[in-house]
Amino acid sequence: MSEVQYRQDLVRYARSLFERGYSSGGAGNISLKLPDGHILATPTNSSFGDLDADELSKVTMTGELVSGHKASKEVLMHLAMYRQRPACGGIVHLHSPWLTALSCLPDLDYENALPAITPYYVMRVGKLPVVPYIRPGSPEIAVHVERLSKEHNSILLANHGPIISGKNIREAVFNAEELEETAKLYFVLKPYGMKTLTNENIDELNTLFNMK
Ligand SMILES: O=C(O)[C@@H](O)C(=O)COP(=O)(O)O
Ligand SMILES: [Zn+2]
Image 1: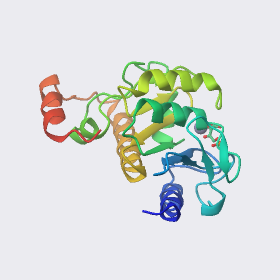
Image 2: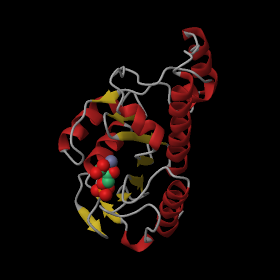
Image 3: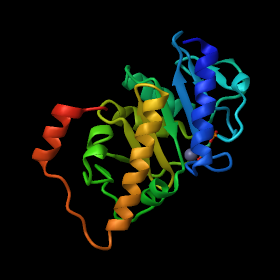
């Protein structure tokens, strides 16, 4: 695939997320790994709805701008995740409504904010650890993300939103969609209580269908 195609892919997935309400205004950022080892990211203050493929920020793995507009203020957080997950090819950070609502709950389990309520959530994500609230753009977020990324493809930033990775941008978006749906289910079920999968159920899924 050429770099032009990677750029078009990023623009297309961003627009799709925007049109379906996963991101609004200038919220969120996306990146992917290019075959040359550089990272292509959304510029700071850009909207997922109207990205220009030629203006995307191309940065080195240490964050220097190679071309395009100034990168997202969260680029260090993305780079921390790529460093810890060598097979990762795409990352999305969203302010999607259900996950952002989840990130604001007072009684969050910081080890795992979303229990194993469905098999597909277990296959794609499994566990969702939480980083305590830190202001957006702080390099300190990257330190926490680096600590958690080795074991987890998705992390929730308290009072902010999720950062979600995948083998490529398509998989990262699929994981984000599954996670957002699971957060929605969690809120729908919370007043009634919910039956979660057993450790045996989870082990079986991880053996047969691990997509993480
Ligand atoms: O919440 C924030 O301010 C950032 O995390 C964000 O989502 C958008 O920042 P930029 O990518 O720098 O526009
Ligand atoms: Zn954000």
